[in-house]
Image (tube, helix red, strand yellow):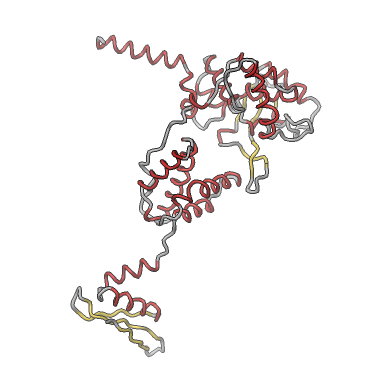
Length: 376
């Protein structure tokens, strides 16, 4: 059995010496502590582990270390973020509480492995979650595990190598309208929102960006006329709307306006203050997505379907439609990317590359030329 001996130095300080006979070296050993609590703790672990100091020391370190759970680490990651808007933080918190914590939350951070994350992915699929939702949630877990490595909670990131679903292809999800199909919708659109709807499809701006445009953002005298996109409506932590920066840094851009759209906008900017919203409701307020969707978009689309429209487009499909029209007219991928405010042309290519018939044709012809060389 180990023992604890209290010792007092000439200066009057007190220390506590733990003595035991270690079977690993077959000799009497001792360690001195300033704290009696630490001395008694070592004695306890020595007695529990056959007087082996090596085993007792590891047991002590393990007992002192509080191992955080996955939920606690992801929460810490969210709390340490600086740049995201409060609405983004609210989205991350919802992801954690709704999709991650119920399955992975209670697992100790140093015990989380690739198998458990893969199981979580499969569980999300069984619950009918889209590939995009799964990827977004996985991105939060991935970033949190990267921070866990930096904070030395664990040595590696278990998210690396996890296969993610890629079923949400744009050609399966997005609806691209022809000019005739858009005309069907526009013809039935309430008069109040026709100009706004045409602005969406003729600029490719996101709904939150278009509804945040002010009179001062429009320059109809420039050659060509332009609209400056620098802001968008966002939600804060209290679910209240405010005007904040665009989705990405690349989202700040200048979009040229077609002459037809200029004619539409002239009466909207005439004799108005620069700070006024360009598009408003009948009472002069912000056009809310939910109201436009429920009271305007859905009834209009249903009316168009009754008249023969075969598709069920969403509001955001006007942005996709804008891009598809540019592609049909042979506009370069770089120009489209800048116009839409994508962070890179890679994003544009991933979303709309399948719509570029000339690129597909060029590829096929290139392969054919190569085949002639080898005699294929």
